[in-house]
Image (cartoon, rainbow, N blue to C red; front, side, top):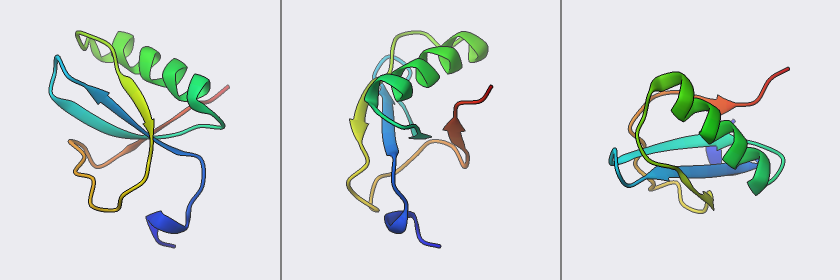
Amino acid sequence: MKINELTNLWVGTNEVENFKVLIVALDKEEAQEIANGYCLDSHIEGKFNITEFDSTETQFNCDYVLTGGQ
């Protein structure tokens, strides 16, 4: 499966840390919650700005995807 064939993808960009990560979430609000939790767990400064994933040319700073979980 190719990334451009997936749905519910979001990009989290943290300007303070110069960091960009891919997020899987049902909507923008859930993506923001996941990113906020990631900031706390990873001791990252600043906040993530969430946008829709729209380009396979996007360069991410890690090789993993953030997801929510119960």
